[in-house]
Image 1 (cartoon, rainbow, N blue to C red):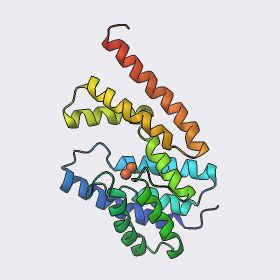
Image 2: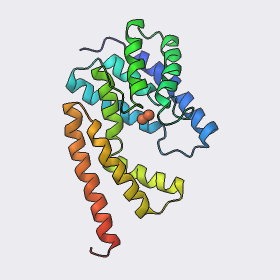
Image 3: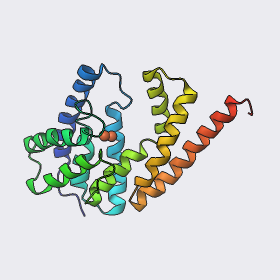
Length: 204
Ligand SMILES: [Fe+2]
Ligand SMILES: [Fe+2]
């Protein structure tokens, strides 16, 4: 499906979302977060790439990507999708986003944080796909070290803990395009983790 909305609509959403995200991050989280605003921009880029290949509604997907973590600092990990969707609805109305597409954006945002709940649209699947891809590859490994530092863990324990979690996440990737990207990122991530273990044992 072709994008119908002008780019300035997404620029307005981006400004609203970024301002609120960064203010919350600083006020509520003291800037101590593993995913700064740049995470949202990376998810956006992945959504555009996957959405184009999968012929998704890019209007819905781009808005959902920019707003998907807007509730991140205001609710629990599983609750931030629902909380964020409420804030997103307000922003979408404010910028004049088409009414008939708002519910699809809301659904994608709500479900991206509820892994066990079914995603009813292609756009909701792709948003979660992109969010999962962020946890793998060079970007994913970098985030592990950031989380490790924030939690005051040692690297070995942190890598073990995250690897177990990573392995579970791959089952949730749905679209064929995301699966291809996932395979490549997964290979790199595994290589890095294995190499780290070998160096830690002085085998390399
Ligand atoms: Fe999220
Ligand atoms: Fe996210």
